[in-house]
Length: 344
Image 1: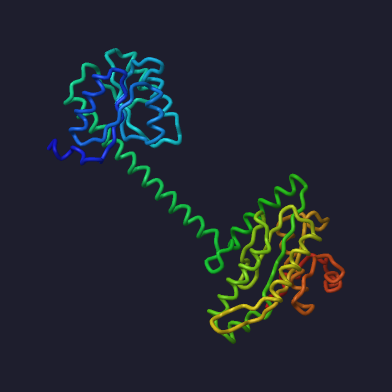
Image 2: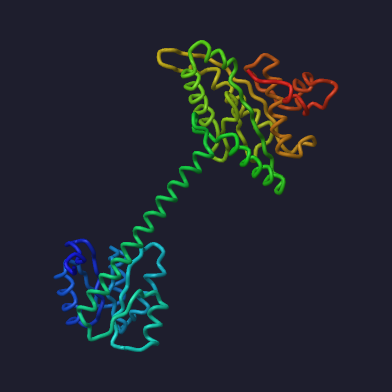
């Protein structure tokens, strides 16, 4: 049974730390004979250097050493967040409760007293290495769980076709950014973009061609956006860009740059070259008629509706003369238009 628990060569590494050369050599020989890879250190600082260079699986650490005690060595190792879990067995000639408590409080995992009984030592080493293996398995499962949670989080936040933020995640980020702007009274702009005559792409070339254009369109917008901007797919062929710290005039300039980029671009699907344009509506805070995130979105959407109605392939800023001229006289310029229209 004992032979089944012995490690295979190179399976585990052990660092023996003791200022007594005879003790070190004896321990090294006995442990190496059991298949362990053994390194040695004669003082605390040398042990710390070896641990940081290549962390062992287990340390057999003498308590009483000159310059730096074993208690201090184990404390530094256990407090180093860059190191993996390392099992530490402390060896001491002081068979007292106080010395054991001090070592365990410092982070030691087990104790063995001198003179060392080698059968007991081997049993304690095997026990600590089992704990080490269980700890590694637990950490591996935790990493797998974290990776899975990260993937699920990304899926929940991302539009599957374009890889951009999806609508729900965009609205969450917009809420946070709007609250931030309110607190600090910093400007915040949004741009709503819609690909003109997109339905005809699906009707003429098929839905796979439409998907290809949406992906390419998403890439083109991302090229124009800054790292701090949020770019997402808001609907079928409708995209929303959130521009923190951006005043209305700068947002209009950004939208116009996007419009020009799309106008000059040829979308590619298999052997087809497809031209399309884009319409954009732009809104910004602060503004006397915008006091909420919903009003900010609705204003950009209403401006987009005006851009569509005025001939497409254009940028309309909410509350501009063009926007006001198109608004119904019976209702405020920033209210109600979105509820009565659909984009195409």
